[in-house]
Image (cartoon, rainbow, N blue to C red; front, side, top):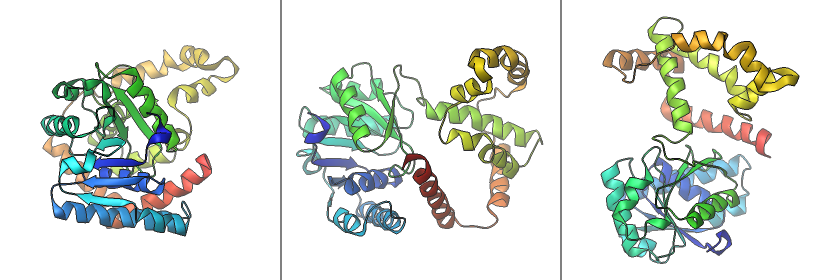
Length: 315
């Protein structure tokens, strides 16, 4: 199968990520089968989907007609077999629990067409472990989106030990066809690429607050008003390559990497557990940073900013 052959996508799980996938696929012209055992989850997911589509139309990301058409493409299911038996691509988006994902993939393997790719939205689990419960592990792969999936371009494509190369190529190309920016994780590691980078950064951000170097708000400002601006369109290696002038990253390493950065790395945090005291500190810090704004208001603000940024960078 090639991406052009796909007509119907099955989305398993109706949470925030599942609703984001539904939004992406439906607005790209695919029929979507959404599965969740619980009626309230299906209803909430449809509300999220409709809100996402309305937002995208209001921001002129999609046209009014495209928005109206996308709302007709989603079908709801409470049983697994009818959800996936005629689907051309399946993406699982349940909670990041290994046992739960194994149970889901065991069902998917039984009820879906034997050549259909089974993708997981896991944000860090290893497909090598998940695919062990299937009879056809070669078609199983991770396609980890970043939240919200219908707006953020990145998808991490992570094959397991027994994933077929055809499955990897197909998934990568399908994500490309959706307008995503896929990256291939060539060797499985917990958290893949993005979350490992984010985890390292977050640990240091927490440590700076804990040591009294700066407030939660100022640490966040130091990220989004400085390096974050460049991160929106280039990564750390290219940033430092340009920082090395005409001689590039080699000069940067000789000039700063073995001196300034060495002293920073020697002084950085290396703990691996967020204590209750740290948790309380961060809760209070975020409360001060958000100045009483509620979650729904913050999500709208975030999405508005994302659209502005995406239009500048990817249009």
